[in-house]
Image (cartoon, rainbow, N blue to C red; front, side, top):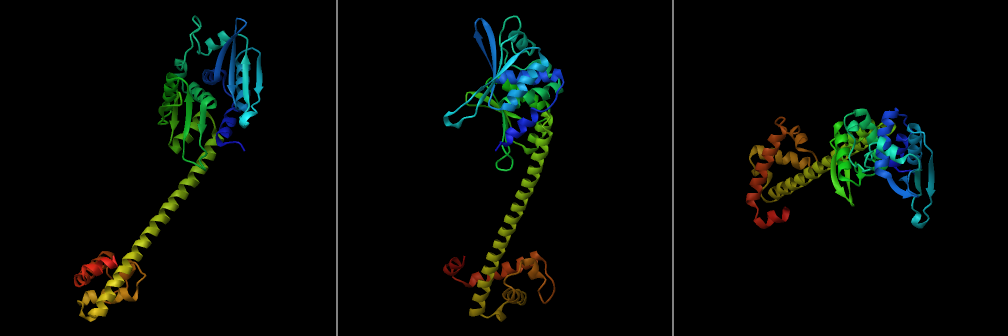
Length: 319
């Protein structure tokens, strides 16, 4: 069964983009998943992924932007049931393409790990670059089964800093940290993860995420209300039990008729209605309705009076 992250990436690989924006996406994919080797005095570019849809995307973008031939190689992993490795291999015009994508300096062949200015200064290119970065090094938790978390992993700190800058260009409140010999930019807020999907073009993923988030948040709200209600019920039961015990103690030892009239009245009503709340108790007073705070005041005076007649040991036993 495909993971939620795989479903998001599959949707992203189906989007059609303008060549200028495709260039930004391909730049991120190669910058994060590409490696260079020298074979027979010629540079060979390998772009590796475990996702076949992403491999096809890389292959398609290369052919959309440049008139070159490339190979799609599959390495099958039998040990420990690891995923297959898909490699898009480019042997032609490697230097020219990498220079055009601002991954290397054309004159010195020096590799650049920062994000090009034309991407940083254009929201549309930024969207495409973030799409490529997520395809290359991104992951997101399934919102149905775990906490909200989306991240993009980078090997280089300046690359990570650039991704952070691009995300926050769209007010995503992204954060960055180091991890496992690399760096990550991440989102923890559900709304911002949904916004990221919208920014990168994963509309279906965004709608599904919102549906799950709304249901999950509603379920959590209901659970909190139920827990709060249960806690209040338990508190009410405990308080009522203590009141009943105190009133019975006075009744057995002194008689309720010895209580002041108002306290005698509340004691008789409480004994007759041990299960009701203070608000409900206030409506049952024969002399007239009393507010919840008024009932609470009388019961507190009654408890203080009764406890003054009981030994400390008796009070401790009841508590």
